Amino acid sequence: MPSDYSEYELLSVEVDRRVAIATIAAPPMNVMTLPLFLELLRFGTQVGDDPAVGVVVLRSADPDFFIAHFDVEAILEFPIEGEAKRNANNAFHQMCERFRTMEKVTLAQVEGRVGGGGCELIQAFDMRFGVVDRTRINQMEVPLGILPGGGGTQRLPRLVGRGRALEIILGGEDIDARTAEAWGLLNRALPADEIAGFVAKLARRIASFPTEAVRLAKRAVDCAAMPLKEGLIEEAFLFDTLLRTGDAQQNMRRFMECGGQTRAAELEVAELAGKLGERRGRGA
Image (cartoon, rainbow, N blue to C red; front, top):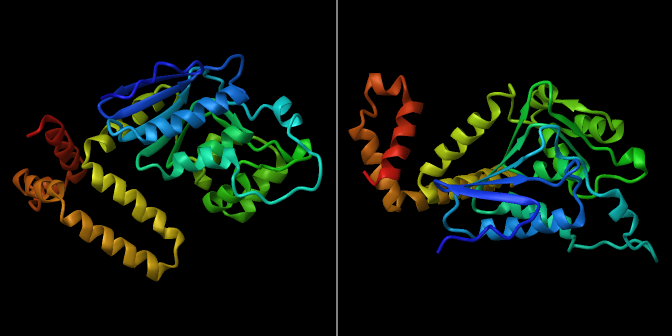
């Protein structure tokens, strides 16, 4: 039974060919208010559990703002009585982790400005894409007297390195798309008229491949956080696990039938891989 995504007010969700595209529309500038946060939290749980979805794309209906930042008025209402205590049950962290750890591929299509908690959210996504001369990325907490509390101090150094993370966090200045791409914060910076088509094509391509291969490949990449020896052991285990699936056996045979390991086919192996996904989608 397909999952029903019709009850969201600040998100519109479309599912087609195993790709769920969620579009944020929270005027006037997509500030992450508590209602938007709760919808993103609920959506992450719902889409993560939806067997009909293999890839998730998050984008904005506003060309100027992806998510401006978390609602400062809401932060001013946070309780401050007593001493600060360590807490392993941070709801914002849990929301971001849901997008990072779900057994789907998550893509952030960032066509405008993203800052604060919005920037921390996209850092948890598997891939991020921006627009040349339009995407601006900002962690603006330190100028307010606070710090990125939604994962930014932990995810940014893992993405761009300690020095660049400190420049972003302590400087509080905009990072343009080209710089973000060069630093590894964005996968690619694309022209405005190309980003939607590129992201959609990539999402559909990934969604067309064997589900277990996509799921376990993502898990294997996440094992890079382990010591190398342990990560290699896990990679070998996941490889052997996939080797025993029907999809793997069938697609490897299809590869050979389509000309795999011939000179002509190997010169265009990426196109050949795409054809395997297309044939699988048609049940061929």
